[in-house]
Length: 221
Image 1 (cartoon, rainbow, N blue to C red):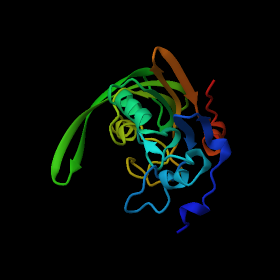
Image 2: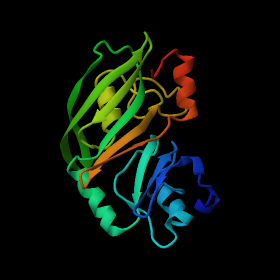
Image 3: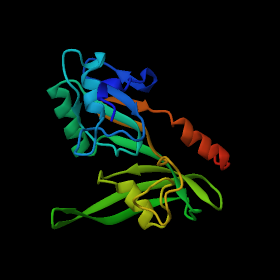
């Protein structure tokens, strides 16, 4: 297992850097924080980088290991607390792109689900709300934009699956055996307001995502 020092930070993956926070375009397949199974994670990698010379990365939100896209690290406690409260108050607006199996009939709508999760033996039911919009589709796939209102674990993956349109490359929430190496779910846009000033950031879709949609005649335009 490679040590985190061996993983080079991709400078192209830096979306924005300032004194208070760093925004990156996270690659698929790497965890944000260390867990029991994570040998390499972004917190460890960035802690040792020039971006956090006199401080450390504070995580203010999560993004699945398999999901790519926009991720914020705060650089100090004050900024971390600010972002944490913005996320909690649902004042951070994230937009995701996904390729789902199947042709979605309705071009836009709202998914509202009661998602079940377990903490130990305790069953917890959480309401999940997502706005969706079909950008393009054919008889096999739908290219969809998601704007989650709530931030539940695996929310978009579970809701897509529940609706009968699982996300391509999802090994957990799918009807079929995994047939695409990467999960085609990408957090591409993030907006928030601080002191009446609007901030907006974008993270380009990965090459493999672009290749897939081009190969299947889907267009973002």
